Image (cartoon, rainbow, N blue to C red; front, side, top):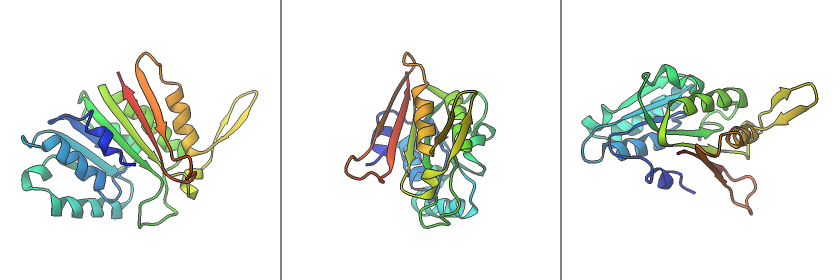
Length: 200
């Protein structure tokens, strides 16, 4: 399942995009190619908490992009929940993409958490432009995907995995303003789940 096939139906040349967990840089590269195309306009804000992820992303972009295209990327060593500190106030963002879990080929003990992911989703909702998309890949077949988050009220105690946090967030978005769906392989229960939140 390739999420950037969906992105192409939303992203336009010259748009501003956010790669909230840039990892090894593949999504960042795809984003730059989408916004740059013929004009070399647009902006991609890519971030990660791991130094090695930023180094891997920089190396890939340095190899694959032209000098003009490289100017469209801003790399930041910051948690995805703080994306509003990176994206300038008032900039309409067309796409915010998340890959939740651990860095492929990296330290599997360093994972995204339900708490920071929920804050990041709230931030993405605030900066997303109308006709924009929040794209989320949740890797559920590893300890990061099973990170627990406690929510307490006077009646119940819920133990939610990171995917459940994402699903709960999406389920509460108003239907008049959002179209929300998830895609998963029924015969591969531990395969990544794709979640798309489209803002009308």
